[in-house]
Length: 64
Image (cartoon, rainbow, N blue to C red):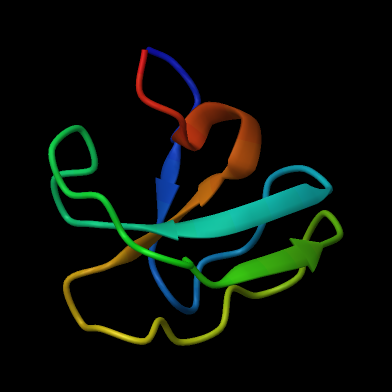
C-alpha cells in the first residue's frame, strides 16, 4: 500500500512542501489558477475553494 496522495481539508501534511488544489477527478479536471500553499510536516490543510476539490503535492499534481 502506498502513501496517500490526495488530502482533504483538516488532514495533516505528511511531508513539507508546496501543495495545490486539484479537481475531484484531477486527470480530466483542469483548474485555472489553482490555490497553492506551503506546509510543513504535521500542519493542517486549510479549506479548499470548492467542496469537490482536494489538496495534492505540487510535484504529483501534474498529469502524465
